[in-house]
Length: 322
Image 1 (cartoon, rainbow, N blue to C red):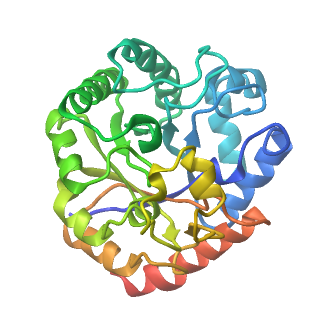
Image 2 (spheres, rainbow, N blue to C red; image 1 turned 120 degrees about the vertical axis):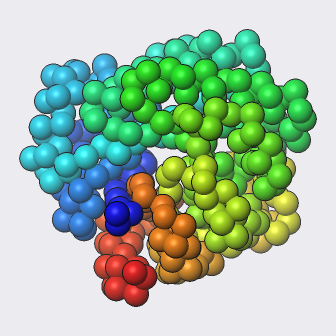
């Protein structure tokens, strides 16, 4: 049987907020552009606030009537699938009345599971497959992990995955460039503590490259647990260890750190990630699942990054990697 790789695009590039991607006509235009670029599936972003019309189930009910009506509207715009939802419990939630929850704090676990269930239930209603979660806070907040905190986090995500599995979903752990989890050995320790039937890895090519990993070698090591991919390029590596800086999200990612890196993330084929080699390894090792392309923190106009990624997929990956 031929292994099937499915492609989609993340909506996070449209930067939902007070001044953008908050009106229904903006969402319609964005998703029509997504379809026009050849991507008929999307990954949603679990959001907070009324200005994120597709980031929460109650907002979808208000703006579209129901998840089923939202699916129908997506089809009208050329989007035939919702593949996944990205959920970050460390972010503030107006609705859940917190400033961020941590998987390493057992006292937060029940609230994380309850909040994750809100988004997982909506994802299941939309026909999605994967709940993508951020497993740890940033290093500058959490510090280096020890066995106790690693075990606490694994327990949290095992609880989330059991909830998601009951809804027909898999849970995948998305490790980012600022994560408290830093090494391949730590990834192995975490996976050993997590339910192999329901918990896997979401493999983000740019985030892992910025953190100093060789993504092809890392994928070969953990391919049996990789259930999901985010494809975007990395334009630099954090060689100075500035993930440790206070407020690294701003100091490093936004401001560029000591080297004043103007952009950490780029369109496929513009940076350090060897996508043909990675995709060849994925095909060799029988990967069958989603690749979600991202234009995270790209320049204006936002649609340009999507078009460039579409060109690279069609003219490089589709043609030269079989």
